[in-house]
Amino acid sequence: MIRDWFSMWRREFAHYNAAIFQKDLLAGLTVAAVALPLALAFGVASGADAAAGLVTAVLAGIVIGLLGGAPYQISGPTGAMSAVLIVLAARYGLEGVWLAGLLAGVMILALGIFRLGRVVALIPSPVISGFTSGIAVIIAFGQIDNFLGTKTPAAENVLEKIAVYAESGISPNWAAVGVALLVMATMIFWPRFAWGKRVPGSLVGIVLATLVVVLAGWDVPAIGAIPRSILLEQRLRITAVPWHELGNLIVPAMSIAALGSIESLLCGAVAGNMTGVRMFTSIELVAQGIGNIIIPFFGGVPATAAIARTSVNVKSGGVTRLVSVIHGLVILGAALLFGGLIGRVPLAALAGVLMVTAWRMNEWHAIRFFFGRRLKHAMLAFSLTLIATVLLDLTQAILIGFGISTLVFMAQMSELQISRRPVEADRLAAAGVAVPSAPNGVPHGVSVYYLSGPLFFAAARRLLEMVEGQDGSDATLILSIRGVPLVDATGIEVLRELWHRQYKGGGDLLLTSMDQRVENLLRRGGLLDELGPSRLFWSADKAILSLGGKLGWETAVPDITPSLSEDNILSTQTIEPFADRAET
Image (tube, rainbow, N blue to C red; front, top):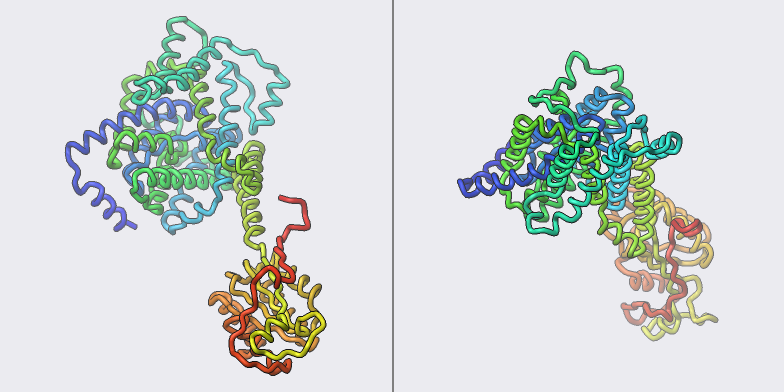
């Protein structure tokens, strides 16, 4: 991994010059302008304060930016992470947040060292979209107090917050509401002007709101004093680590680690598509882990790569990872030089920023796709993940969403199509095979079943039921399994039961057209040894010809291919594993 890291740096800075530095400098200034108000807002939204958000942005920008797996990643405090942390802060205080962040950093570092980043990619997009929308709801509800200029008891979830307002009522500070609405309107309409592409609306809105409050003399809560140091007074100290809470913080730390990994890798995937530069997944996770191990000891909150800031970097023409470092240094300079002015920013202004950010966080294009196309499985996974995120612990939400998507995927993958085609006497006669006459034109006790789809536990039993309902145990069954890509243990057992049933009843079972993987699985399961090579064929027509001597046929030509027309299909059935239940 160290070799990969040095190789990546070498390629990135091989032709670095003054012109490229100028691009990085301008991009760094632009990203800092976007990140500064968000750092303040997410610091407050995390249950800490604005100073913690600034420290996080500075350290994440410098440490994670330098060590990261791609030149375009910009890390810092994010809305998704703040939704996790505000609940954690309400339960365990800032010490709990810091210790959970430290543990999460160790977990993310381990994911990177052992190259387990691919595990994160297994989470389906409807689950991620539902998780993101649920986080947006949590952020919005968490800012109602600042939006209204009020103070109510802390709540661990949205329902508790609603109950608090229902019990105590709402007495808004209309000046604070006006400040928040001013910031929201600025963020919505500012991008329509020419300068909107160069100066972020959130920064403009905060400046305007602060000026209005100062000039009008309104009494609204403000951020407060900003320390002139990157090492905050309130921070995690080695001598004061709350080890007694370690057991309680393992699960929250897993939430932070999972969220940080997911968001960072998604950010890298999005930016990679924009730039054509591939991110080194394992290196990125190592960088995120190291950064989150360091940040709590300075008083910051857990960080992750941010898609919005990374996109601004790419669109601003940033070339190397120095953009992230420059953006961190600019934020540090702003905190040190203009801390007094930043301290006068109204909390309502930050609430306005977060309200708009929460709305924009939703992956509206994905939501419209799921619901507009009526993709029921995606709609179910999205909706349940959203509800679980809002009402339950975020780790539980991820597990619930992942579990639902896994079950849905298994149901889709386990649909087994079975086409039953009889061997027609007149068809055989036309091919030069003399067959004893049969009343229905079908040789006695010969059927060909064409299977398509995985022979998994969810559908394999239904195959046995279908055969038992249509063919006796004295029949000769030919199973063409060319369309079966995989067989599990239950599928092997069903085939064995079918073979034993036919053998005991005087019938037979022939297998044809096996995929190499399926053949290997059946051989490992012992079924092929039981059947013997005389019951295995390359194709269904070869299997049919092999029955000539046994059934008294006189074969004239060596090639018979049963017609696949609909007229020759006796029955076609798609076995859906949950077809007998309510539609999911």
